[in-house]
View 1 (cartoon, rainbow, N blue to C red):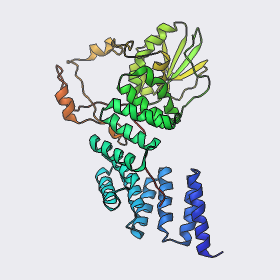
View 2 (view 1 turned 180 degrees about the vertical axis):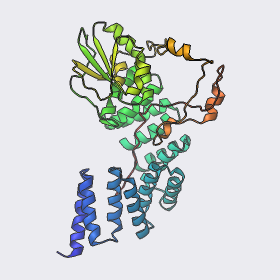
View 3 (view 1 turned 45 degrees about the horizontal axis):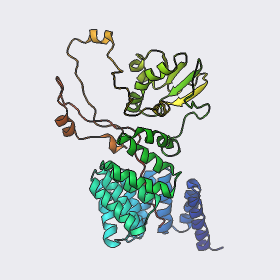
View 4 (view 1 turned 90 degrees about the vertical axis):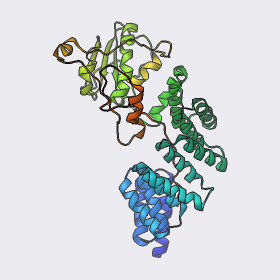
Length: 380
């Protein structure tokens, strides 16, 4: 077999591995192909796609740039490079590259979808909606296109439109976990909790993997059994959910309740009577278990019965130690990779008017669960 034929065979094998989501196998096959033909821009681009799936973003960037240097007119390479630049936080560069693609090829569906996602991250929500509508008009209905348009509507707080579009997507794929999860976020934002909570369980098939899967509590009477609750996300999400611990205790007064959460939460959560706190990775003997953010579903929480009384208080000992009037500060950014957790400081400054409040830092943390976008990575 000639070297050219061997290179072609490895290229085909790489594409087969990628089609089966065997990303390591794909990278290895494209490595062999490129060792025989270093100027194969398609192999470089497709290896870059596989590296993105493996979260090797620096390696993917090298491959995309090398492929673009060999074939500077490829719209698919530019579109995929733009997706990567968005992941790296280079939103303006990503948008410029996608606009270049669309100037050359106005019907490039993935470029429209990807530009819509970039505009969404730039908080240009009306532009994001227009881009996703263009993709839908060009290529017709699909789960991914309905999902992306629904996300854009949801971010723009056009919640009825988002719910309608997401339901159209679910008519095409009723079991699509990402779309179910996205709709749960929209429904929660709309205050439609009873509809949202069952769909929110799709997070375990989309954005998260459960720490525990056996002996899951289904909401039945606990009696004297032991229930292990475990925090699944960040402090903000846990802060929202622990308000339900007193409800759980009242509903199951004889049960032994355990909460596994980061030790940094323990001092704050120690004020919940009848709940034993454990380190996040603890795995004590238990009869049943439940992720903390599934608790409102099993308790049937809606806006009508959501506990509204204060549930976290400054301990008396802390108040005595405080020699000046207590103040409050706000943090306006969370994880750097999640742009949805930041709000401009001027928004909080104009909306908050509290005695003794000083806007050293202001903003509103968001849930660490954010909608799933469907970005296009067409093979080159």
